[in-house]
Length: 328
Ligand SMILES: Nc1ncnc2c1ncn2[C@@H]1O[C@H](COP(=O)(O)OP(=O)(O)O)[C@@H](O)[C@H]1O
Ligand SMILES: [Mg+2]
Image (cartoon, rainbow, N blue to C red; front, side):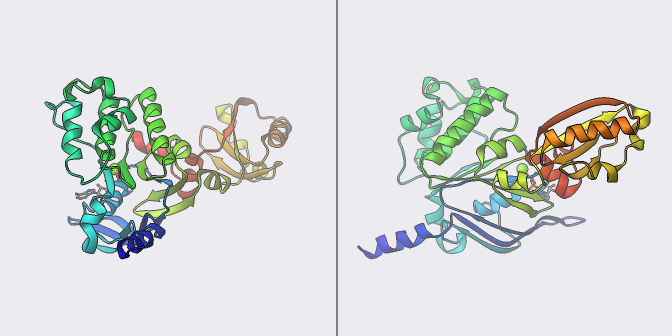
């Protein structure tokens, strides 16, 4: 084995990404501390998601890792290398899809990919790239004629032509219709299944839940929870959420301590117009709840149960609601 081969093997053993105490402040009055001591390790071959609300620092973080932004302090290693010493080696091995990709409207799909392919010494053919994102039928269409979903798939293809070991995607499905989102998820799964590493950001909990092997929940520039979606959901205490409401004027007569004492309830939240219970076993909790309401003469107005989701993890950790923040 020659020396080069030894070195390549050495790099292969390193994690895909390591961030240590990453910080980034933007100047201004007041200074914006967008990333505040973020630690992260992304392993080879996993699809890793940075999940958090708008303004959490996801784009800042991913752009630092991509080498597009300088951190204020902290270390970043990408594929075992540092941007300061081995920038070009990293650049040849990664593919980047930005939050908003501005592709030239006048170019066709094929011309766009030819251009991006020319940036890399090695890679896949433009035909293979087009096929992998199902744009082969659109190869002669101009960018201006593509739908939002097609443009987003093309943006992914521009990141794929260099056959990257590591693919970055910032909010890949924001603004897409449900069908296009699913289509893109399938494409990303196929890339992951070929042994590539993916780092993506998203503010969609369902996207992180379905697509990512591991997720870091980011809030105010820090990782507040880390694990597989399953582990994170289990950490809220029980897989089920039982939500109920009583007629409005009786809401405050329900008692949080009494609810917490019901069978298999692990936590209780007063959602103002309803109560939300975390439960280990919904089929134990519900009969106990109904007995309680009857004993207290409270009139049930609504009852739903659902599987706990990453949304519930975020609510539990922050007391805030990720969904409401997006629309606020
Ligand atoms: N170029 C910039 N100058 C000043 N503040 C910025 C800049 N870019 C982002 N920010 C601020 O940094 C914080 C994190 O932003 P960002 O990394 O884009 O978060 P996210 O991608 O999670 O929405 C926000 O408060 C945002 O307003
Ligand atoms: Mg962003």
